[in-house]
Image 1 (cartoon, rainbow, N blue to C red):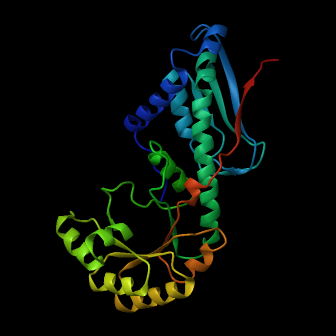
Image 2: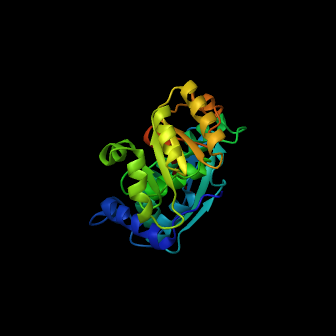
Image 3: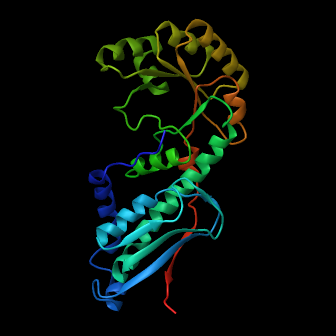
Length: 288
């Protein structure tokens, strides 16, 4: 599935707020050097470490908001793995737009590229297996749309975007309701078609309860591998249509062994919560 950016109506509101935060009452440095739109310039973006590039269309939008005459030309495909020193974009336009937008545009792309890079490492560990790698709702407030876009660029599948996307009965819901069966029974009459009900389970007894009460998706949370295998075998034998997800302490070292138990999905917050930014620099092109 190709990564999908939010429409301009949504994206522009985010970018404008970040530009306003950075610019404040004006870019004192750039405005002291150049009158608005008086001088044109060119620049290039270069990656300073190897990784997967994500967010270039967003960067282009940043500069467009500052000046419709700005041009941002991507030199690589979105999601392409680039080596250290590889040029990834060429920019031209007024100096004030290029210099004022530099930090916001780079911050976004560096953050998203870091997420895409780590996501891709997880995806590659299970690329030859039918299991799909999935992200979570552990995202930075205000950045969820873009961080989840970055995991898609890295090859992952998005889990629910928000609480209204699906029903996920977790440990605290189970405790509050008094059990899995009670939670499902109380929730099912209130959800619209075609939302599904996913239940988080931590033991074979909870898996059995989720099966009895006809959960659509069963998550195996923080289970040892042997318990996972038993759970998958039981679910496949009893209700082969139910999808199975594994979650909890998934690492690059363990993801393949978890996938080999027969999972449909493996979810992890690590690509978003543990990734580092990909180092990218902008360099002005000075005419000789």
